[in-house]
Amino acid sequence: MGEVIILKTEPILLEFENEYKGVMTGPRGQLNIGEGTPSFAPYHLLYGALGSCFYSNFLNIAKKKRLHFDKVTIHISGEKRDQEVPTLKTVTMLVTIYGGDKEEQLRKSVELGAKYCSIHETIGKVAEITIEVVFK
Image (cartoon, rainbow, N blue to C red; front, side):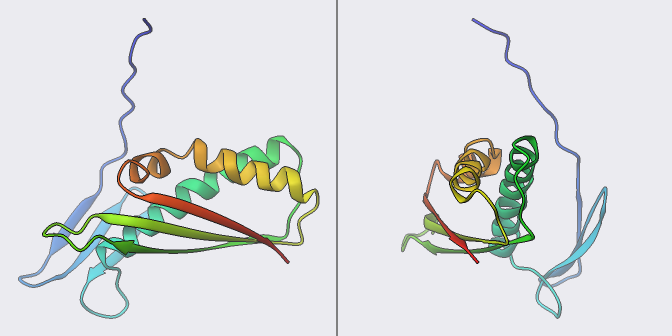
């Protein structure tokens, strides 16, 4: 059997006041968390992590295939289970590709972008993830 390689992620720092209002600082910047404006709640951060991981992989694949598009928007929503600890039940990703050529190859790149996204794979252990692709 092959050797298991552990990849470390870059650390972040979370600082909270004596309420649900804080700042997350990472190697590349900061963002507000919790109550207050503007700020992000935990599921917003999770969806953002999913979308950015997916897009990074999709973009690398599309570039390798020399596919062209003008821009991509990703709308992510989900539904939680009605339990004491409400884990995600479903996640829906609406990927809209603007000005894309070779639609079928772009669709395949979306599939591969999801397949190689570690956050997609992690969330997929507890939730059913559906991806819809629209071209404009």
